[in-house]
Image (cartoon, rainbow, N blue to C red; front, side, top):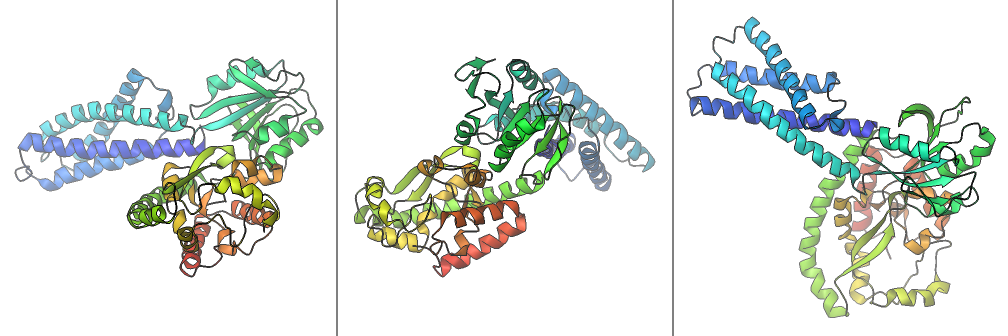
Length: 470
C-alpha cells in the first residue's frame, strides 16, 4: 500500500471510530437516564468517554490491526471491530478499576455502548470502505500503470501485479519490447507500443507510473527508456534483478510483490499533498460561491454584448495527460477557434502557446473580464472537482499537447492550477514558451505548501493591480 493510501485509510478509520464512540456513548447515556441531568457522577462518565477516545487514537495510530482494511470482507470486518471493541472495553475497564470510577459509572450505559458501538462502527466502516474504493477507482485518483516487459514475461507480470497491487492502481496498457505485439491484448490489457515507438505513443497517453521488467537485459539497453519516462515526469518502477541501478531520486521498495528500483521527481510527502487537496476543496467551495454571485451580474452583460453562451468550455490536458473540460466566462466571439488559424502569424509567443495583444476575437465585455481576471472564476469548479488546483502549472490545449516533447511533458506531472509561478511573473511580458516551461518546472521541483501560499498572495496583488493580464 502506498504512503498516501495508508494515511487516508488511517485517518479515515480513526475519524469514523471517533465519531461512532461519541455518538454511541452520548446515545447510551441518554437512553439509560432519559436526560443528562440524572446521570449521577458526571465526571466519571466524562472521564470514561475520554478514555475511549484516547484508546481509539492509540489503537489506530500505534497498532497495525487495520493494515488490511480494504481487503477484509463483511465477516472479517465484523471480527476486526469485535477485537477492537473488546480490547477497548478491557483496557478502559482496568483503568476504571484502578481509578475507582466503576462504582459511579452506570453498567447499563456500558452494555448499551458495547452493543451499539459494535453494530454502528461495523456499518460505518463498511460505508467508509465503499467510499474509499470508489475514490481509489475514480479516474482522477486511480494510478494509471503502464507495464513494459518482454513477450515471455508480459502475461505473467500483468497477472501477478493484478493479484498483489491495491485497488488504487489500474493497469491501463502494456508494451512488449522484443516482439511487435502492438494492437493485441494480453490478459485484457491492450499492447499499445513496441520498442521503436514507445516514447511517441506513451507521450500522448494518460499514464502516471510505469513498471518495467526485462530479465537479463543490461542496464545500458534500458537506460534511455527509463530516462525518457523520468523526463516526462512518469514514476518508473524497475523490477530488481541482479544489478543495482543507483541515481538521484531513486530508491528501492516493494511494489506489487516485486522488489523494484523506483525513480521519479515527484517524491512529495503525501501528508502535504492531502493538505494541498484540502486547501483546494475549501478554496474551490468559496470560489464557486463567488462565481455564482458574479454570474448574476456578468451573465446579462455577456448576453447583451454578443451572441453565444455565458460560459465557455474547452478540453484541456491535466495531470499526466488526463483530459478535462475547463470552464470560463466567455470573453470571445463564438467563432474564436476558427479565426485563430488566421491569426497564427501574429502570435507574440515563441513556441506552443498563442497570445496576441488587441486580439480581435475578444468582445468588449471580454476585455474587461480578462483585464480584471473575472473570466477565470468558473475554474473554481474545476478546482472543486479535482481537475485543477488553486496553484499549479498552466493546462495546455490538446493541439499544444500533441506537439510536446519529453521535456515539455514533465510540466504535466503535477495538477494544473488557477495560478502559478509564471502567472505572477508577468505573464503578458513572457514571449517564449520555453520560459513558461522553465518556470513551471521550477515550481514542480521546489513545491511546498509555503510556496503555494506565497504564490496565492502574489496572485491577489497581481489581480488587484492588473499586472500582466491582457
